[in-house]
Length: 343
Image (cartoon, rainbow, N blue to C red; front, side, top):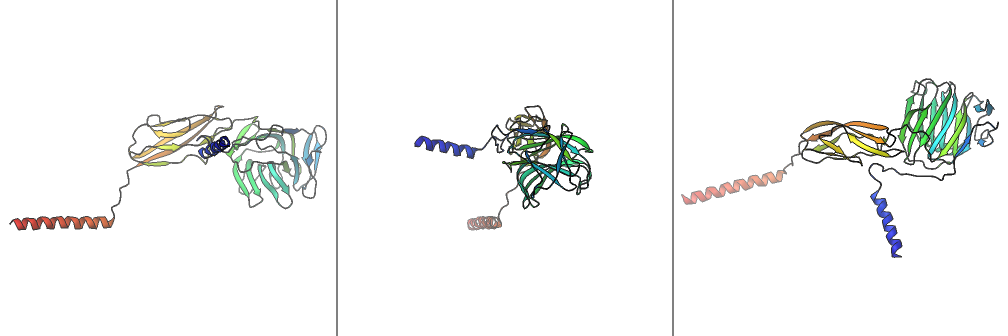
């Protein structure tokens, strides 16, 4: 009984202690048997859910690829529980009135009532869209559409026309990367959604896709540098003679290799990302660049200022000043009285 209690206490102690500074994100994994693929070479798409009362659209196979036929939205979904790993596919992009192709690669559900529910969606833009003018790629998170829609990032890509190769990766730390034709466009971090039941493709007439491969728990392409947790480091302020201790938090799917700082005379940074001063810092501003690399050699750098100010003076309460003045006056009065008595 006592041994079990001891193990429980150790477990809670580990939870309270938390992970290391460089990797404080939740990590999650799934079983290894969830990978799947489809190249439509069998001439059918029987494993895909399409053409239903709640799933609009019409598809046909042409030249070994699946193409949308309706002018309005065409949606196709495949069972998929993968939440970490790699999603790869070829997409045929043509410009249509609404200029968008959607790939919900992690999704809890799609219904006529909820539409998108708890998922991540890569969006390819083939023309102007809302305030965006150029062809590009975006990454979205949706909890309930449209109120729960969040845009992570948009990046222009140049004209999207014809066949494009799309790779999406997500590590156990929640780092998500989007590659188009082998080029990294989006690198972000999110752990909000950790379950999936569906993978999907959504396009208009003439949009197509092929060679879909979903690989569970394995990153097949990794050109992404580390990413700052909670955003890039900002300016830090200390008072003169106070020591500097600044924690920089970074994570990477392949793991963090090392941190370094450009000003090694005044500053040092350890393997956990803790920045400290090596020498006493005079009043002023010190520009500094901190870099971090992953085990593949990709590097992330950020610049900010260490601002050193004069120590704040401690204000003296008015009551204390009054008491001091009264005390001084009292002492003077006593001295005068003593001198008068001597005379």
